[in-house]
Image (cartoon, rainbow, N blue to C red):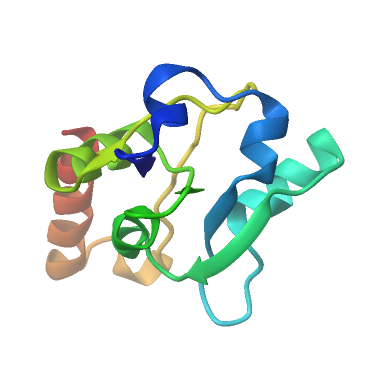
Length: 129
């Protein structure tokens, strides 16, 4: 995701160097957790992105990249939804990424709980849409 007014994102795929040197908004999950993408990226490529800002939810990132030469990686589905609502341009990252696998985890004693069963079903429905 990148600001639609920045020509570099509109006209070509960024190379590794351009991508790494661009400012980035990074996602941090939870108070004590590390930056999700950086933990994956550094061991594979030996270099980090230039993180200018961290946030705790993806929904904030469009506001932070608009009007800037900043980027923020996110899943294709998440990026497509953001591009429907905000003036951002989507472009592929210049390297291979493994598919993201998400799982739900809950305490076993909630397996038969009606409210929790409903919530799990609602999450599965939303995730598969």
